[in-house]
Image 1: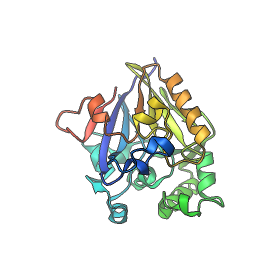
Image 2: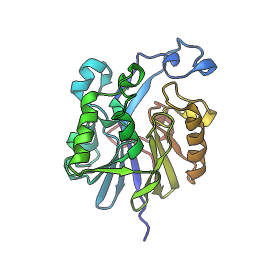
Image 3: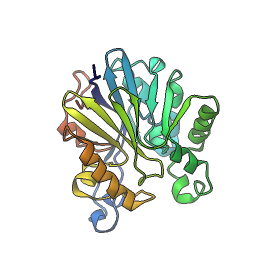
Image 4: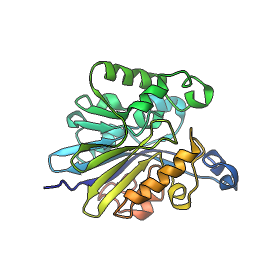
Length: 260
């Protein structure tokens, strides 16, 4: 029998000091000074006896210099849903930017699933350039390299099923190894975009995000996500509009949402 999953979004921080011009490029960035909030989420993909986590956020110690509005450690936020981080067997990292790959140590039993091209880029010659370096924490990259050398890193090359009903798909654009996730749910296949679409405005209005390595790749990604989402749901990775589009989990209003 095919596994049907439930999906939850768990908010752990927000950036409420940015402007539209920080996130979009060209005419899409106008008006440049318009305030635009960005929320930070981790994602729980749940089925009986199994939890898969998408992204691990960033820690409170990292936030000391990143300066976001920090609610709590992502692993603690997941515990409020009943997810036990020490028991999670599969963690998917959409990519290695600081706000997605910083809490890996809180999942000591998990295999970490990443695209091979992502690791190659961040250990290659261009990662040290200023535009790229600002988006990562060096210690996060070092940690991932250690996990690879100790056998806990699973490096995908393209699309792959992680567990029954959960797939990763390599679509470079935001970074060279960015991946989004598709999940079989009672509503059909749901796409969790992570940073392949930060805001709904990206995928729904064909407007690339301002931070990228390949803008053509972003357009290809938008097309692929729309095609794969048989549920009609492509879920943006950072959009406060999630709280308008999906119901809150009882007792966790403003913190956790049920997506499907």
